[in-house]
Length: 348
Image (cartoon, rainbow, N blue to C red; front, side, top):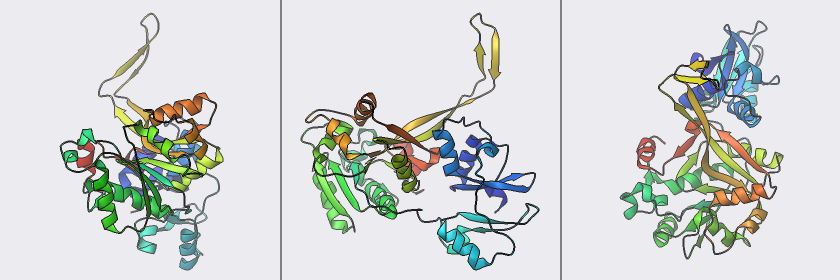
């Protein structure tokens, strides 16, 4: 089990992020010729991306100096407590020769799949659930998109569950299409959340309806589309938002596109500069989750069609801070289209 959780020191950040996605884990052990060198977390990679480092940067170049590991003389109870206190997915036991003599995994020590979030918080969450779900027809002719099943729960309940795990239990739901059915279903589920609904009289775009909340939300809040799931400790996104004093933070998923051909770069007169065989392009994709400060609601025009991208551009143009927090490709589940829905259904 240790071998699959390791990565060589000269691997790239992109390779590390992809391995985390494959394993569905957020922490890897870094080795140099079978010697322990450090621990690499998803947070380390995210911080490097935020600092605009290339995904081709070597793992060794972003390793933290201060990490928590165990020594052979440490008792099991000491190691267990350290793992619990710092929500460590794994804890290697390393001797003076930098050899790993043992390793403890969260799932074995605590009989849980993954650690709880590092910090809980209770902020309002706005879920944009008023769309027609045209990309998921014909099922949305019968069910509104937020009530489409994903495993044994609806998409909406999965979103509730992820935020509730962080400590959030107040949800404002923007409704329009089949609003009565959404409210009826949720009422009969007896969910342990505070739910309120606000309805557009006419379609107002992904941000236009937020203007209806100007007098209701007076603190930092999350916004999520109703067809996406983000597998991330949301407190880390919130910490980034607060530390940088952002007015808006966009959660962006890395998306990789392999090109199945060799690409050529040339000079102005057609001379070869470089030839790259089957490169892979990586982009930051707007995932559909955001953190907003309440004052930005005042920049949304009333009774007008207005997308959240319009709001972001307006805030940015007016000198506001707009941050981007990256998550790995598979940490973002977009289930708003048939292919992605079928891929995710039953795998959650």
